[in-house]
Length: 312
Ligand code: NAD
Ligand code: UDP
Image 1 (cartoon, helix red, strand yellow):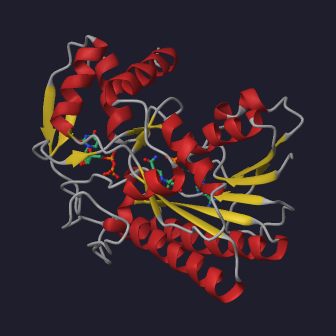
Image 2: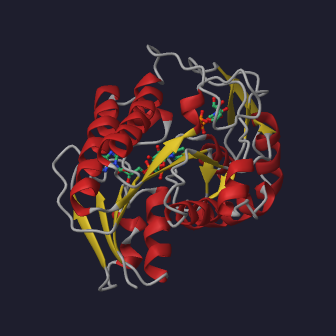
Image 3: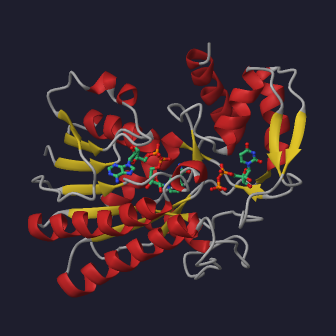
């Protein structure tokens, strides 16, 4: 049956892929976004679909949309964007969660929170299982995002316990793919744009820090599986690709795949930059029968193809 689904942050990188997939599956999708980091171009191809609606609205305003399911993605995700106005970032996570949870309560809708591996901070346990409680600096430059997302998780579980709201929480690890902005500032888009322009590749620190990169199609599959999982499975559940790479390895791979003349240059490491990150995805495999299918090289080729079309 056609479901009415609200996607906050639906004009962003991940949100636009999610809206597209939900429409393909025959749903009625409302995308709510304030276009802070999202773009109309990301959803332009959906605008003619009668089952798609775009509402330009901030999640800090009251949200009234009759719906069966809510995906709450509204929040800038790139460090440069979430640190641009950190107070607003904190508000977006916390007040955005309160507004969407209130809506879920009133509509009896199921609600999924796009949480993050950042709630583990700079982890002392490797790889990170969902039971690990994290090592987060509460007063650093990343805290507006990390602690905002942690508080949002708290609110989700309190609404679940106190008001029996049907919640789902996923912790997303670094995800990349087409429709990332060229000025997004995250590592995959930065390296690809620099390589395609034959500019220096900017490695922060010594490049030995690690991340695990998930291609966006794999993430969307995991997200939708989680939303439609059995009622008593709330998560949190890690969704990410366990392949682990240093930033130096990533830079070398991007240079090879783009056949670029770029050279590597080293810049200072930002404050509180986590040294390593890799998801333990046993829970997702067990509960959602989910695991990623697209390796880094394959995903990078698709992403590079996209950036070639937008970089002149
Ligand atoms: P993005 O910046 O492309 O998307 C975020 C969207 O939210 C944008 O369209 C933006 O305009 C919108 N938004 C921001 N503040 C808003 C507000 N106050 N009201 C309404 N809309 C608002 O980033 P993304 O990578 O697509 O991330 C989407 C979600 O997934 C975010 O919640 C992010 O925290 C989470 N996440 C992403 C990653 C990743 O690697 N991409 C990792 C972990 C978690
Ligand atoms: N990074 C880098 N060069 C860049 C952008 C990022 O070396 O041009 C590093 C950054 O310091 C971090 C890693 O790449 O160690 C991932 O950064 P990103 O901002 O993509 O995500 P996050 O730190 O939130 O995982």
